[in-house]
Image 1 (cartoon, rainbow, N blue to C red):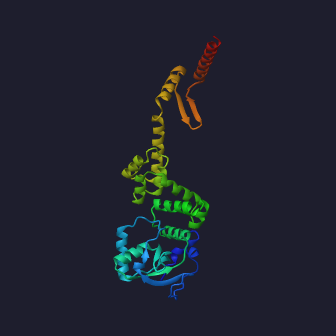
Image 2 (image 1 turned 45 degrees about the vertical axis):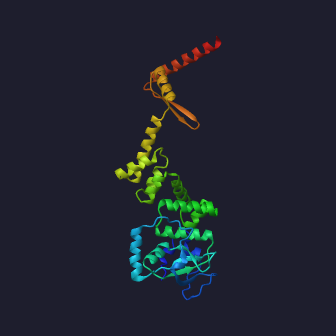
Length: 297
């Protein structure tokens, strides 16, 4: 019996992408419509568009025990291979297929349907998202592949998978993180929320290790990242800029801070009383007169 409860509530849903409900009475393979049948497990091969790269061995072992006791309860979704119509490419259900091989099942139930490459990728991604089987990096790579290979826009993709455009954009930003942090995400040590908080950090790997060591939540991670960036921006000022700050502080008589950005910079002068402000204006005025006198000579 096909489990239908997972087919709804996410984007267009698998039922929309796959067409009409399965007709279980069909027993011959006809690729013009969806077909249910039983085939040799040797005729199945992993799909090219499987977004999932990490298969947990413990969960596979549990599934093997279930398959040995009750068989495969939900058919594997496949499509015929173009080079060999007698063999099939798995679109959804690779874990079940792997478990059936370990359990030494000769035959497995399948749903056969003609799907384009784009449809195969969409179905594989949506199915895994519904089951929450993907790591944040696998999810991001799936979105990126649909956009790069099948020319989806983020808006179109958001409608297809039932996510917001901002969610897709934020997930894809995770692909810019160092490999060490990607591995932490794949291993489940960090969450996507933690990783997003580290995106703007100049040393995300160092901060990620601190987060893991201290068991910080996402909000604490965001606070830590902001504090580190402020400290880094202060200590990263070049020697000339620090010298200029010291000279101006000495000249004006109170603290001067200089900050730089892409469009220039800012000079911040801190004074306590109006008398101090009046004094600095006089100093600046005298300095200007001195410069003018030098120019007239």
